[in-house]
Each structure stands twice: as structure tokens, then as C-alpha cells.
Length: 414
Image (cartoon, rainbow, N blue to C red; front, side, top):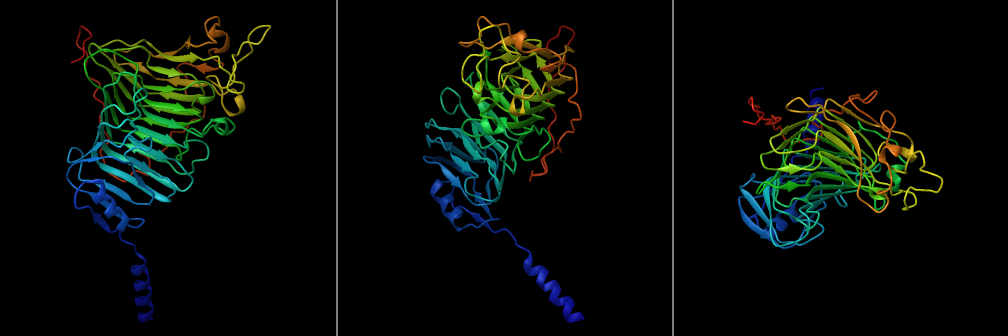
């Protein structure tokens, strides 16, 4: 009997798999590639302290951790000029891929910062990364996520990162589904699923001299789905959804702090042009200027026909894929609840036209109707918040406290 027990213990001990650590000699791409090549699934590739410039993209196709020595300790400058990013995570892999612990600076390249591909076999985690600079002229995508649609069976979790931009039109994290978004529009809405993109506990800062800003921390398109929660955003929109057949499918945006500093002007807090979703418990601290509403933008380009939603004989009841529409264009209203300015002003939905070829002669309130397509000060019926922090998070970072500031008697922020 004793021998039997010993044999069982030996079996279980031998079954335990320990991760090997492969430390690169330097932070150069060549040395990191050597360490990565020697690593197997489940291992850790350590990128040591130092400052290095990379001139080509690094594809991570194994289920392992790429770990720097810490923010502003391992510093990589991106001269890759690649649409695949300085790191390309998640393609052709299974299990879990994690990128953590470093600063990435924009160099001379005009690509994107970090590319991720959601798929049916791998979880991706990006945490404790500092991204500083303006990538990809025009849209400035610090991170670009592909495949974030109904087919993604494993999550992408982006948390505890610091992202700094200077271009006022930046779309910092671009989240897209498939190439045309159509499959997502034929799939059910599932706001609580843990297998979509989760962006939580990050800081997004529009830096530089105070000015007008239309930057977006996240931008949903092509049927993309995401949860954006517990983030702190400075001097830009809270979030944005693209329009027409390229629009986002559904979203949850909750418990974020949007801070507009002195001298800054932001034209809208939100720009919702497609799909459905739930906004709740967001707070705006305002020393600069931002409107007192959450904007739903009427965009009259039909998803199904790519033509204007203006048939003869008058407007239809609704436009395909407009805000408040979901699976197969079924009615799925938008809901907002407990969104306020720090001063106490209630932030409700309001409707306006998006500037485009179809809209100038249309009344958006004909198509976007309160208490049908959207509801103010109303909780999403039956909604159950997904587990927070996301259970796929590895690091045990403390949950940051939003710096909302305090108001003096004159209304200024201290």
C-alpha cells in the first residue's frame, strides 16, 4: 500500500509543468528572438533592462509570456513601420499570450503599436505597458485588434497600461470584427460574455498644449464588440463607434472617469453611430469644455445596401444598423444610467446628425426615437455585470482610484 501511494505521488509530481525562463542577453530584437526561439509554450521570455530600437515586427505565435523588466526600465523604440505592429500577438497560437512590463516609444515607423488577433483558441493579455507617441498618421492606432466579433471564443484583456498621445484625432485602440462586419450583425447580443475584448484600469492621456480634441481611447468597427470599464481618460472622447457597414456591434462602457483639463475643448463625450450597448456609472470632471450630453449620431447610410436611407414616399421606420439596432436589425435599444458630470449635471443621450452625404435634409429624431431606440436614466433590463477584474488577468495590480479632482466654490478643479 505504501509503495502504491509513493508511486501515485511520483506520478502527480512528474505531471507538474514548470515554466522555463529564457532571458535575452540584451533588449535588441535579435537577442529577444534568440530567447524566444528557445522557448516553448508556457515559458517566459524576459526582455532585460535597456533601451533598444526595433526595425521590424515581432510575431508571437507561441503560448507564452513576453516580459520586460518594467515600465521605463525596458524601453523599446518602434521603427518597424509595420501594419503588424512592433508586436503581433495571437496569430496561429493556442493557450495564452501575455505581453507585460515595458515602455514602447513611437519611432520613425508609421505602422501601429501592438497588433492582436482574437481567435478561437487563445487568450491575449496586455498589461503594464506604457505606449508613448503617435502611431499610424491619421488614425494613430496604438493597438489594433482583429477578429473581435461573435466568433471569438477567448478574450483579449488589456489592463493597467498607460497610453500617451499628442495627435488630437487619435483612435488609440481600434477594435474590429471581420472584414465586413456582417456576421456580427446576425449574431445575438451578449453584453456579459467574458470572451470579448475587455479594456479595464488603463490611463489614456491626450498630452501637449491645451486645444480642441477629438481623440478616442477606443473605436469600434466592422462588427467589433468590447467592454470599456474602470479607465481614466484625459482630454478626449469617452468612446466612439464607427458608422455604416463598418460599425461596431455592441458595447458596455461603465465606471470610467473622463477628465477635461483647463484649456481643453472636446466636442462630444460619445459618438455612437451604430449598434447597441449600455453606458452607466461614468463621471466627467470638467475644467475645460465638453457638452452636457452623450451623443448618438444619426448616420443614414444603410448597412445592407450602402445607399442612403431615403426611399421615395418618406422616411422608413428606421435605418439598417442604426443606433438601437442589433441582431438582424431587430430593435435593441441603447441604455444609459447614472452618467454625470462631477459638478452634478446629469448626462443623458441626445441625438444629432452625422456629417455625411445622406444627412443634411433629414431629421434624426424621425429615425432615432427616445423610449424606442434609446432610453435615458434607465438600467438595461436583466443586465448582470461581467466579473471584474476579468478572471483572465495574471497580475495582481491594485485597482487604481480615479483622480476626479475636487471642486472649489468657483467651480474650478483643485
